[in-house]
Length: 140
Image (tube, rainbow, N blue to C red; front, side):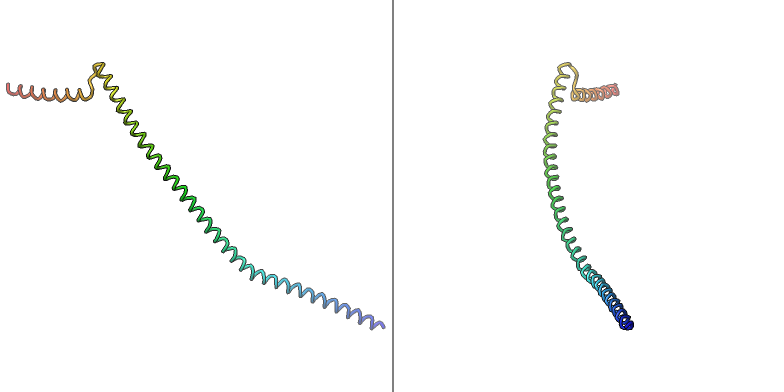
């Protein structure tokens, strides 16, 4: 009877050990299967991410290009307005300058100070007289 009990215990131990080995093997195979699936689907998932990234990049570039174009358009409009305003300011400054020159010349004339034109005219006449006197002096 001791042999029967011992055989039952050994059979039970062997059976339990076989079950553990079988279960451990199944866990191992499940792990390998998961690794293979992740490897396969991971590559596909990576490609999907790349495609999504390219689409987002393309949209981003389009938005940036539109914003740059809008900004350049606004800058061109501002330049045009500044140019127009600059021209108007220059015309007004010319008018103010001419009015100032006229008033200063009028004031200097009233005080009796000769203008630049008057001085140049007198200088030319003086040159003519000097030349005439030199000719007369040579003849004598």
